[in-house]
Amino acid sequence: MSNAPAVLLRGHEITRRWGGLVALNKVSLDLHRGTVHAVIGTNGAGKSTLINILSGEIPPSSGSVELLGQDVTSWTQPRRARAGLGRSYQRNTIYPSFTVLENCRLAAQATVQKPWAWWSDAQQCTASMAAARASAKRAGLDDLLDREAGLLSHGQKRQLEIAMCLATQPQVLLLDEPLAGMGAEETERMLTLLAELKSSHAILLVEHDMDAVFRIADCITVMVNGAVIASGTPDYVRNSPEVRIAYLGEH
Image 1 (cartoon, one colour):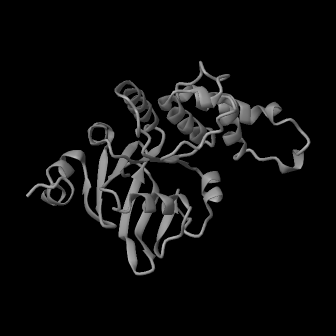
Image 2 (cartoon, rainbow, N blue to C red; image 1 turned 90 degrees about the vertical axis):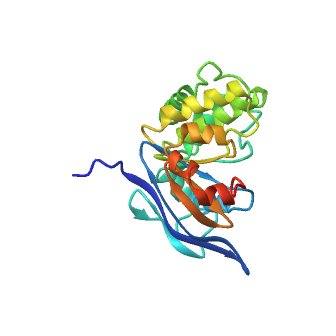
Image 3 (cartoon, rainbow, N blue to C red; image 1 turned 180 degrees about the vertical axis):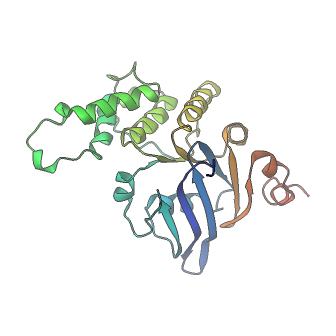
């Protein structure tokens, strides 16, 4: 029996065309439980298009996406979310006038929907409240449950976004630039959180902070002009001549 970690999300030869423009060209990658898989590349490399296709926001022109062994290429984003896929965005998508706990509860409700109980008070749903409290605690926000989200620091807002993802009880996390705009202390907190989360999740990290990427990632995929030019361990990518030429500008 293989000791390799399970593949939780797989993209196979994903291609996306916008008219005559090829935004993604036969991109393949596997996300394993217990690993952080970073995708890096300059602006326009196709990183956002890739994460949007994996999450179900846009369909591929060709290729396929598998989640937990199922072909989900035709599934909508909400259906993928309910099946175990969590996603954060480059820009905050929190509810600023709601508390930390309320934000997490709203996210949790997506997985414990009870349309037949439309008359009941959502705050009395013990399952969603328990998931909300657990996710906030795991993201390091258990001391801020009653704080309005809009009053949090930038780093805490990014933590809240991840807490909201965790409240949906995903197995796969797609994180789009979670370190953007963070100071050194906030970055350290986020990297610690990601290290704690990876044991029970497969994490895709799209990030521009190269120091952080090479610290936290187990595997790195490098994209240029919609195509993968290298994929492997941080040491492999760091020493790749193709990456040095195409991404780091070396000759």
